[in-house]
Image 1 (tube, rainbow, N blue to C red):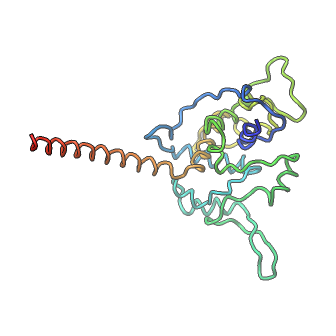
Image 2: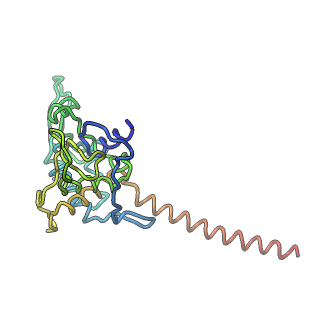
Image 3: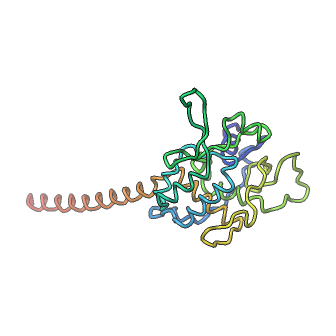
Length: 252
């Protein structure tokens, strides 16, 4: 029971109360460009996801295992990364006087945290600690499908007779259907640089794709290596079979 609640809380959830496994809503499977053996991350989608994270999610959620320079792996230029990092400030130090100070982030820095520490984060969120999103798609059962479903799950109104507790919001995907996190995405809350219409569903899919990449930045290379290994094993199997036929033909 506690495991299921903890997993739900880690997945973007600032929730109270509990829900049993039987109450866990089913999450609809989505079509992802990175799904399957040959799947890859769509670069345009990733860029939009970065924009949604920076303009919406970064105000509450950290991404402490990802550095700005890592964005070079998904097509950002060095100048783009420097400009993006410079928009945020991080705490550094101590300086020669032993004091901590703030400075603009540089590409080598991890994504700037929205709060100085966990206590400050809890104080700003009514006692709840917003989870780090670095590996959120791996930490929650259902992965990317669940994260997308949760973000888009605010679109429906509570069914007749459903009573929400004070300070809670209805979400069709979250266990128990009550979540303390307010709807993070509204239509056109961001203006996409590539002109894509920023619907709630579109933003949910884009930022989920970005978070899936953040959790597994090596996924594409791993798949390429796996395909090479499979091809090698197929060729090796053929050669060994031919060798076996040759050896036994000589014996007979």
